[in-house]
Amino acid sequence: MKILTILLFLIFHCADIDGIQKRKETKEKTDLFVLTLTQNRNKGNCIRKDFSTNIAYCDRRSAGLCNPSFLILTNSEKSYNLSEGNNLVKDFPTCSYSFSNAGFFFETVSDFAEQDKIWANNKYAQVESCEVLGLDSSLLITESEYLFSISPKGRIAISADKIYHTSDSILLVTLRTMSNVRKVKSDALNCLDLGFSQLERDLISDLRVGKRVKEITCSMEIGASNVCPF
Image 1 (spheres, rainbow, N blue to C red):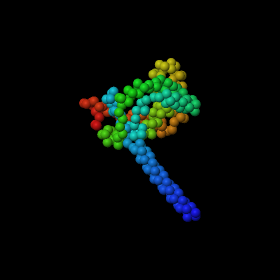
Image 2 (cartoon, helix red, strand yellow):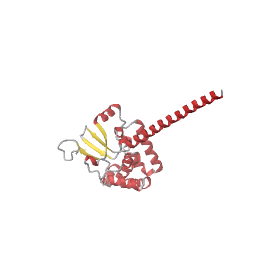
Image 3 (tube, rainbow, N blue to C red):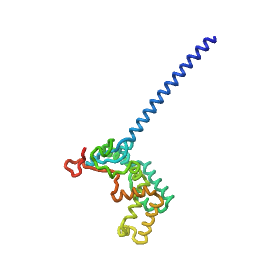
Image 4 (tube, rainbow, N blue to C red):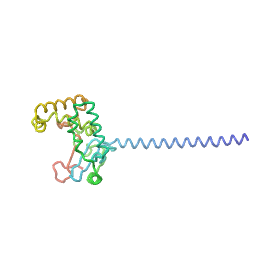
């Protein structure tokens, strides 16, 4: 009886060890797959070919972000944008006018037909870098800077910066009085100073004056002055 008990113990113990080893090997393979997938998603730059305009774009987005989702607006994304904008205004009330002029309220959600059109007209591809395509990429902002610039907060910063640097005569057309113009410009500057870091303000300023750019473009039309070298 003791011998039988020992034999059964050894059988189940060995089976358990074998099971643990197999689970360990499976986990190692899964971890390696996830690591490889993550590394690949974080590699390269993004090129978009718009066949409706025959214009190609290249930016610093990595493979995991190189897709048409940035051209499509869903109901949940619109709600998120408005919520983030409202939260910023709650923290920094002087950002209110900049928020209202950042375009969120005029955006329309992409219906299925519009989404199909976007997918049909735009082809995305991961490339090693925009430089290897023969494009001058020296002014391109980084991926994190790109994502900030198109985020709700980044768009409000761009709006505030634009308002502050718009001439009084142009603002006067809609605001009607100089006191309103001065108030709006003061609020815009205050919004930038209090709601955004120096790095964020510098980025928005660089984008406004063309010192840096979100993307570089070239034409896919044969014979164009800036024809794509690929």
